Image (cartoon, rainbow, N blue to C red; front, side, top):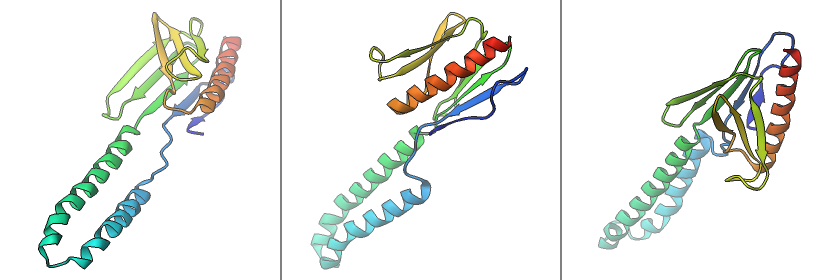
Length: 166
C-alpha cells in the first residue's frame, strides 16, 4: 500500500498520512534494465564490427538506447510526488510536494472539512477530495482504484475520530 498512517487520532494527538505513487522500478532495476538492453542491442553490432555497416547502425542503436534512458528517467522523476496529510485537533494540513520540489499547502478546520469520494463522476474511479476553507483538493489521484477506496475508508474513520474527540 503506497500510503502509511503514522499514528492514530487519540486524546489530543495527531495523525499523519503520507502518500506516494507506486514505483516498481527501483534504481538498481533501472541500471540492470539499461545494461541488459545495451547488451542485447549491441549483439548485432559484433558481426559488423570494423565495417561501414557498423557506423550505419550504431547511431540508430545509440539513439534508441538514449530514448529508453530518457523515458525511464522521466518516469522515475515524475514519480517523486509526496502528499502529507496531518490531522490536528484544531486544523487539517495537506502538503503536496511535486516532482519539481515545489510544495503546495492547504489548511482547513476539521469541523468544516468534508471528505468525498466520486465513484464514477471524477477524472478517475474512486476520486477522493477534501473540501473546506473555500477550496476542494484532491488526495491520492496517483493511487490505484482499490487503494483510493481503502484510503477513503481510513480517512473517513480518522476524521470521525478527530471530530468525536473535539
